[in-house]
Length: 418
Length: 122
Ligand code: SF4
Image (cartoon, rainbow over all chains, first blue to last red; front, side, top):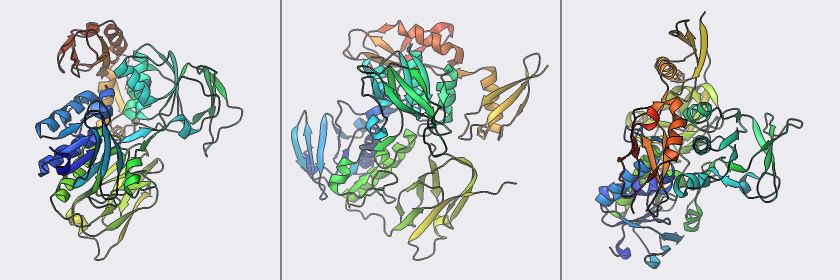
């Protein structure tokens, strides 16, 4: 395949990129290529050795490597071309891609369509702004995961984890099983940031202390981290004076959220949504620039890889159709976040086709009713920022839309209790 | 005398703190505070026989890849997670290993095999 003939170029060979590329081939695109900066395809799944992947997509409980393997095999079977060790350095609004590749040298080509599948990265200490010294021994949970599960190093003996995201809780269990002591998991909110299953199976199973409504106010140590000061926080998340205490540790892991990785999207001039941190997309996952699509964690941070795969398949299918001269979604109805809704993806729909909406709330609430304008209403026992809401709108429901509707407001309302 | 036991249901994001009433002969006499039926089934299993799939890595020899990821072929009793991990810490595997190959049988007396979840090339 000559790069000049590429129909669909996928940026990133993680679960999103692979799923998009496979679907693009299956939809009929001839030449589909994945540009991946790491040595092999599969992305972060290879370091997520725990199980819980694929429960929905495959109806099986798989580990990360197993889930990745199935997709990588399928990509090879369907004739997707993978270019590993290839770093995309730029995308222009006209879809001109420039990249440097270990195998191919400098590359510059213009595919018929592009799928952005760069995924996300972890918030670092800088993004969190914790005061104190700057010693060694502070890692993001994902970096520690790579050390422990891929490279074979244990980052320390006595560990504090800031943030109760899923990777943090999973690393708490993993490090305990590898012989380290997890002194505490510190969470600013009154509830955990990840899934309940992980709180029970990673923290409770091993009696790992969870400090809710606490934060780290200082890092101590000169060469290597020696301790952190933790304090209780008030309702507005400010540390309460007098509640400080010192916890000795030689390692601090940060598990305080993920940010979609969109430097390339910005270079291409793709419009980003401030709430998701990712491109605004229509129901086909086309971005604000025609011929550029996006799927997976680059669009918004998912909690299940199964949804990443599904969403990226949609992006891959649309990219293939666009490359083959098809028309995209017609008409744009804006979905607007109302009460206790942080974001909705896609940001616009056509109102003509069946569509799945992914949403997150701002705050935890019990006994609520989710209302999609006047077309759908659904009672929910509980909503949490950490659990993505997924709602399908069927064509019959969309028929309720009035002619000329330009905006639908999505609200999460309080339900009156009996 | 009936004892009370509390378990968090992980069946859905609600995470109900479910109360089990345990009779003197260690039988579950009652389940309350679960907001749905599914929770009843979960806590009963979790009380009587809590099991987990153990995932880990094992060291390799004769490969550029330092570790191989593995899992128990079936869930094992929760109390066997740590003994299982300790048993795996002493293991070294040599290539070639394919995903699904057994790397150790009868982990820590559970009767359950540990299988590779990735490939190991030399
Ligand atoms: S009991 Fe029902 S409602 Fe409560 S956590 Fe379990 S599944 Fe959810």
